[in-house]
Image (cartoon, rainbow, N blue to C red; front, side, top):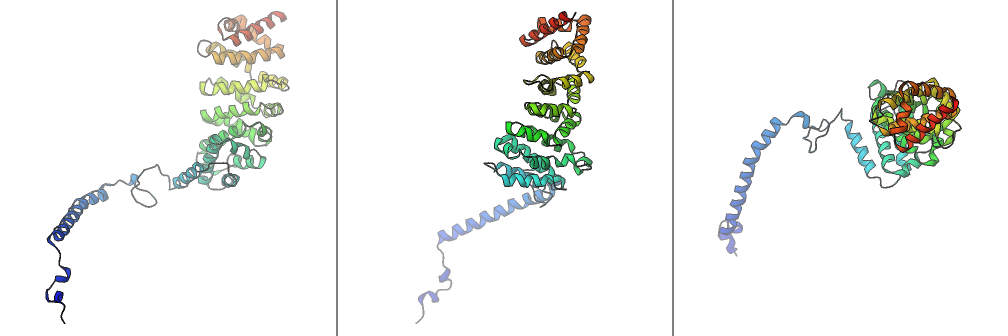
Length: 349
């Protein structure tokens, strides 16, 4: 028997007027979207500059970044990995240290940046890096002659990151001895005082100051020749580096335990430190009271030990009245020390 629906052609797919109207509306909307989108896509394809395309995928970047030979991808990944570390991870630190031994510049650079970041933000990481092997690996890019980073004039970036990390790991008391006694550390810090950027010089001086808090480190630092570069750093007169330079000089010459004072004073005499300090006191007397105070404190301790240096200060006083001005106009501490210098001079005649 025939099915009644088969006798009516198209009855199987019959639609109500409402359904047909809805279908036509959808088709119209789709066509409108296609028409509007086509010229927009064409315009994008024709006008998108290569600067905003990823050099790896050639796709337009949603968040453009400066890219150099695609290497930025590894650096970004490294920073993301670092940001995800909620607690100290010795295994992760070890992998970064291994990368510092790599022949790849991008590995060295990204690892140096991350180590600096981790020791800035997470004090426990400073303790984990406070051993001789870790310190040696961390310094490897600066210690190897002919390193690629030197050839590509990128020493400043890596040097700055490494010196900052050295400063960070020098903060814990338990690290100071092992860091200073690593044979690479002090020479590379001294080199940074000579060749680094302003920030690197400042952090290098701060690292020497922190390492000098341990008395046994002071003799080592003085014997390595740190005072000369510190004196020159202070003599440059850059406010951004002077304060840390003074602090390091004070710790080496006049710190709480002064076993190193004789050798430090002798070294400062050879390097013309007294003349440098007096010059700063004259030039910055009305501009930087903290600088004048630091110079006066150091001069007081030097004059207390070395009468020849005291005579040089007396000659300066007789010619220009530098110490008397500080005794009258300096900070409370500077006035007290300047008065003490004048009294010492009066006693020796």
